[in-house]
Image (cartoon, rainbow, N blue to C red):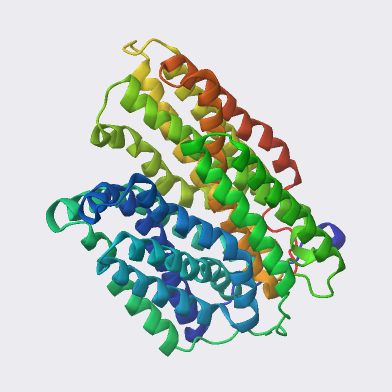
Length: 478
């Protein structure tokens, strides 16, 4: 009988230092995630004003986003390993203070060149910050208690996505685009200084510092930078010889990275992380979900504005249900995951995501103005938000929980890499499909959305490798 049951932890009240540590870690993790999420959403609204004031070209303004994305995506995993070696709290402090300082510098920048350079610097500090927000949670909470902290973090990100355009629009309209970048400076400084000054109790079983795999980090950075740079360029330039070259460089560097990791004595990504079927499957689910969601959002935005003739503000209002459902679904998903397990919860969420995209496709394929167009759009965006918000919580919980504590930073870096690469992949796929079919009418947009719906539908197969129950054993559990 005992062989068939899992030992349970006695729920003894935590001593005050541990309760205080968890509250501080959760506050820092949520604040760091919100600052990064808010920065990206408010920038989109401020870019036209920035372009006019600094007399910048469209390509230069695009690099304020592209430069950041390339820097952050290329360094996330290595930054996570730095956190495993030197402490997630230290990396968090350096990351959030640097991020805030770069934001202040952009607000004071005299030309577009400075803005681009400081956005790249922001990407570097963002790479230090983002894995640390997950690594701190992994070391502060036991595996079975991670669900709700991750859910609260996801809800905060969803709230930032909803509020960002409104806050950015209001600041830009009344105070100018520079105010958008000053928005994060004070919160980043306060949280960063507190993280430096407040010494949190160390984990009960501190791990030995893992060595740094610099050759592996260099190869992975080249692969990711080439991949992301190529993907973000596809919407503007299409599929060209440069696109093929970029993908070839990414593939070659990726192959060399895999070969190096298999032979390295201390690989950047330990076999216990990606070698875990649960972690690898959860990363695949996150990549597919984010690609499908952002690809569908990209096509849906064009449909709302080019086919239905809505202005950007009206389009934003139509998409608000997506952000609202992300906020609401995250806490609910933590409860569902405890009751039904990660496997069934994530599979259901991916099915919701696929059905949501299918509803958007139905709205596009039907003649605009039909009675079911508006309900199909609203239902589609609602299901997109519910499905994606749930997947973010459940898949992230699997990744963070099933990685050893000593590799929590690397696991967080891999999760953030999937979340940063997926949107670029989804938009590139949508652009390719729209280019092949012609994107000026509703029918090609509907066809593209049908193809994008296949991503989460097929990724449901990956959920079969996820744990059936939330209390399944995980490595390095405290």
